[in-house]
Length: 109
Image 1: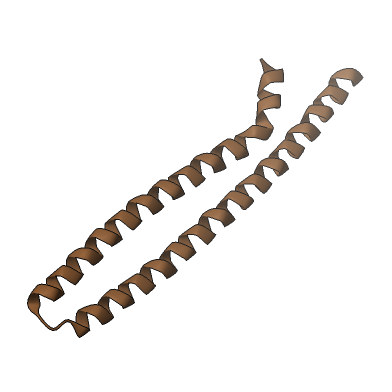
Image 2 (image 1 turned 60 degrees about the horizontal axis):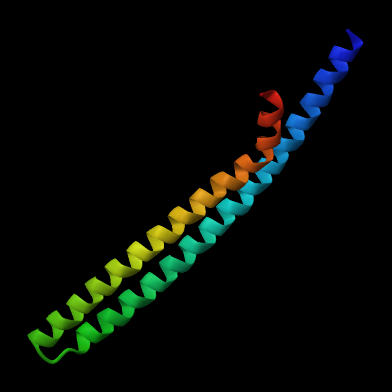
């Protein structure tokens, strides 16, 4: 009976430690994602302002359409690249958050 209690206490402590490690990974990953999203927002805002200034200075309709088309293409490409990068960060976050539990799951099998 005492051995069972000691084993249970040991596994409980191990699981709690594992949970804390996982939470630390989640915090670190979430911070990286937030930083990346903030940087993307800043770049996007700056690109929008630059395009608006060019558009305002355009001397013809053709030039304005060209500026708008270039901006739309650039914005789309930037969004796709950023979405891919954020997706990779989320995948890495999941891997890192699960990593501490791998040993616990292996022992349970």
